Length: 124
Image (cartoon, rainbow, N blue to C red; front, side, top):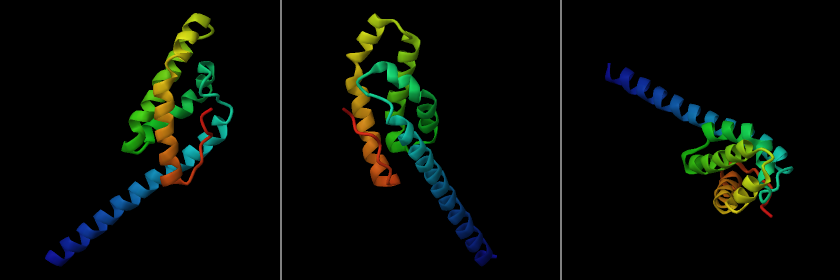
C-alpha cells in the first residue's frame, strides 16, 4: 500500500511539472507571436499601445509570476491610451508617463530572452 501511494504521489508530482512546462511553453509561443506584432509599436508613441492591447492582456493572464505585474503596467497604460482616443492633450499627458511602462517592458524583454529565447523589439 505504501509503495502504491509513493508511486501515485510521484506520478502526480510529475504531472504537475509537465503542466507547468506546458503553461510556460504556451506563454512563450504567445510571446513569440506578440513579438512579431510589437515591431509596429513605438514605445514612445502612446497611440501605438492600442495595437497590442489584446495580446498584452492575454500575456498578462498567462505570464510567469516574475513578469505578471510588468504586463499589468503595460496593459493599464494601453487601456488609458485607448480611453484617451484621439484626444491630443490626454495623449500628450500619457506620453510623459511612459517611463514606468518602458521599465516594465525592459523586464519583460529580459525574461523573454532568458526564459523563452524570444527577442522582443528594443525600446527606442
